[in-house]
Length: 357
Image 1 (cartoon, rainbow, N blue to C red):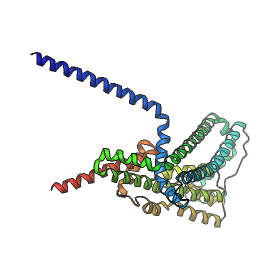
Image 2: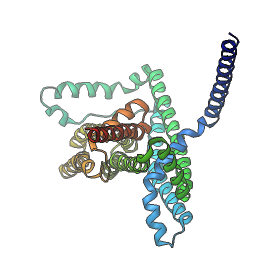
Image 3: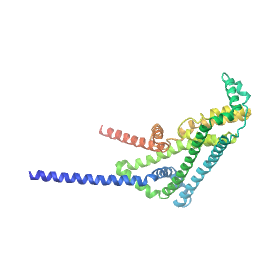
Image 4: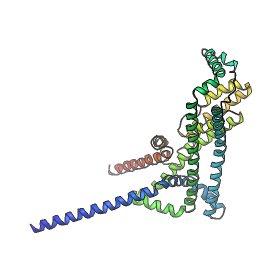
């Protein structure tokens, strides 16, 4: 009887000690999370950028006799330059347009304008559209005064969005600096990461670490890279032909491309605008330019996404799209990585089942 009581006492003591230890670990994890929470997103982006740009640093380091610190600094500075210059151009265009609209809406200095007579030639709806635009041109001041509170609200929201865009730029600049630090110390960091994967996945750890790095590069080039290429080509056309609000439209097209939506959608009304305002030669050149750029992703994505990866391209695409719907742009990478891990587990399971069979 005494032995049973002694065993019960030991069991209770062990349970209490385990509960206390687990509670202390939970408090430690909870406190650590809240301390590092502001840095999670920049560090995560820094790691993604470092994985993507590390091959470039390796090649540059070989050319300058193995000095990784100098090579990573050069790549980081070039990346910051490439990011800041286009963003500054687009931001200036957006800011000037918003301030122009804000000043017009608040001062009431609006000029009457006349719609293009060619609108009447549109089939079915041409006359109605022309009459509506004519009424709008004649009563523009009264309409602006009537809807001034709503217009101010929309402009305020646009300015707030512009400010959040500047905050995102600062976050990406910080991420690039962190990526430079990671790339400069890539060898010891790689060893630690491989040790973690080997500890978690056993003999397949090294293979999984290489697989995830190739997935990150594939998504960055196949999704983000193609989006930037498309938006840059279309943006060049917008600025070349002096399209109004070219900076804002370029930003919208970039977001659509990253979201894997057709870049041709915002170009359709621009084709109509050029048809009514530009000469025939400019209209034809703009349409051909826009169509080639808007449809170029159908050629670029199969070439770039999934290249050099052990994971099938459909798995990468589904993971990227689902991750973006769940967690935003960072989900492009997290979703692809998670599905790639599951694909690795699935292939290992298939291999083990074949061995047992």
